[in-house]
Image (cartoon, rainbow, N blue to C red; front, top):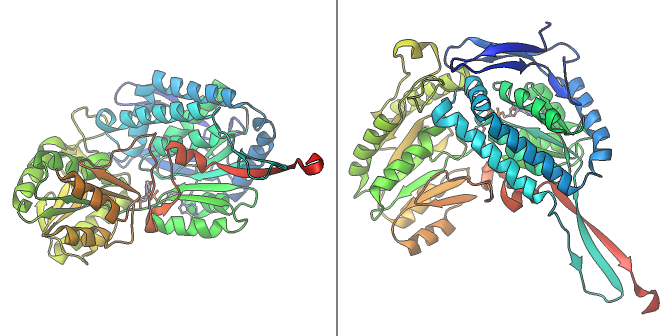
Length: 501
Ligand code: NAD
């Protein structure tokens, strides 16, 4: 099937732009070799937003070849110059914040005003932060033997493959592109087949601000073909992935082909613990933000809430009231809406199935528990924010990642019980603790198995601070200096000074 390489779009908020639809390889938009395409579906209506070219193994190979060729020159570019280019990306995101936010909303189902534009702010912070690192990547001089000079240099890997999901298309791309480029790597990035549009628009910006051809390559494509080809490619040096745990395992296996370095950010079922002494108003606010924002499609969402038995009933009453009042549902361009549609019909059906399972398992529905069929919303993938109470260990809605606006609330009596409940999961991404007792807070933070702990908040994320999980939630870290370190490898250089000593 043949499709145009670009098409004109006018969004409901009045934004007009030309949407690229090709594969962005070597600074040009091109058709896939076999002409394969994929459709981007509007989550609020189920209609087709547009058709873009989808990469297959041969296209991945072409992108990798161009990246490899570009690396020869790119590795000679100074850190200062790389930092200037990354800051120019941040500048352009700032100038086009409204438009890029609108494209992100249109493509993914995020409400524009309450959700999508904040992702653009996060991208800006991320590009600026790593721009600052680009000229500060240094090794060490290691002194032991006077007859020897030994030092390390932190070299880029070379060609980095990056595979991102649909829940934060631009932010996940920024988290990966910015440190990789700051460290001097070249990139072939594959977007999710569900959300290809915003990053194709952004691809053009890399060319416009002056990134040389081949340094940044952005391809749309399916996981089983393009994703697999990238993860197993023999000339890709490192693969970074965000997505489900099952896919993360497949990528780790594929990466074994040439023993490429791997970082994985995968699934989660993060607990939020509310002790008897917690500030309940704050706990209610953060517990809602931690699962209902971004339609619950957050890997770190605090989707299991454990409340001390003495404040359990009061919490549930205030929590349901707060979610009902503050998390209004609507389309992406309804400026009064906070919660938009789920990204796809598949996700929508999967979540409704879990709601059904929760009911059959005997959990009590306190709020929602169904599809939203009000007016035009019935056409899209809208699910009402849902609170299940009285959940018990072993229930599937407690153990499995639902990835929607559905939370499971249970009770506990002692701190030890809370720790056991929090840790009884294969995942280990985030955890939140609400208490006024700072000593207990720190104790719980050390006992809970998670890559990130929030004391008296939930889902607090900051580009300066490492992000990532333990157990089946992933390998490695993104953001902060730790995230940067995932894009370099140390080379040790030994210089023999012993001839005269
Ligand atoms: P997914 O794993 O299905 O897809 C993620 C990406 O991997 C997509 O680009 C997809 O095309 C690609 N992919 C799929 N199969 C592949 C394969 N065999 N080889 C290579 N690539 C392949 O996940 P999703 O549906 O996009 O996202 C939802 C899941 O992602 C949730 O489970 C969520 O917890 C997780 N997630 C985790 C984080 C995190 O930071 N830990 C962030 C966002 C999402």
